[in-house]
Length: 336
Image 1 (spheres, rainbow, N blue to C red):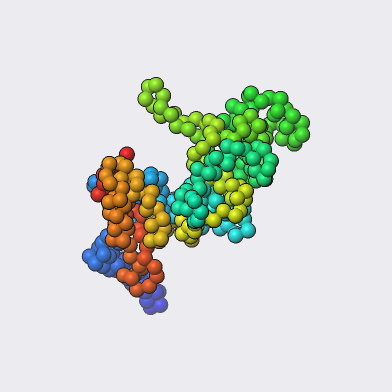
Image 2: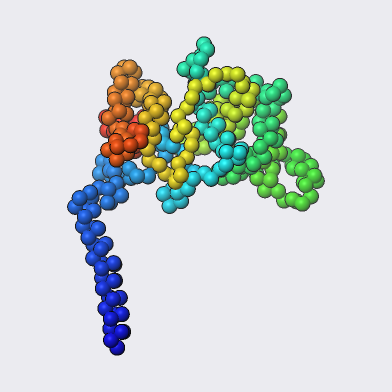
């Protein structure tokens, strides 16, 4: 009984200290010394919680600074790195898609201008490496990317299902050549779809277009397009291969690479400054103010909201994307 009593007292004291006293002391310290951090660094906008300064979330409007890309789609419950090797084409494709709409010429008559309009003009000519049908070549060379397009959105698969109904003979020929797949799914027909689409719609790519119906509602449908962000991003890599000697400006590494968690809330000052022209010009247009003055104001806001880790003890200065975007909204109002 003596040994049992000692063991029980040890168990009870351990539970009390480890499960009650210790957590309570930590909670009291956190709530009294640094309550904001202890409660998750949650920030509010007009009395409503909009996020945490510790976790990145996507911003897509041109008025805002954009965070680093996220392999976890900014889902805090599924934080992860991309885990793609440097030799994996999927990594090259993802980086290329990020570069297409933002990269600029570094020299020549177009120095400082975006490459994107020239990507669209090249795409509309519908020739890659001297051969016609760019979209078909893209699908043939990268089957997994074509299949990825189908699975990326339910509307894409539905579009191919509708396409099947008007191309029954084409589908029948494919089934004869692939007897092991008598009832092909949209992803099975991805390459065939793009090959056929490319011939029927030269210089165009299927993209989601949002329009307003007569009753005022928004409606999104897949349509053939010859310009836009899809063209700029998907076909930047092919354009680059067709223009290997064109000098392009360097892009900050954290603009096109994910962090280890995919949830890094900060970007480098260099990254923020690269986005500065877009952000400032859009706010100037929204507020109908002098673009130069707005540019100076936003640039100063970047500097005011930048800081190195641990109070500047080490590392380079970083900008918290949530914090700077809330500051922009507070100063200029709601984006249009």
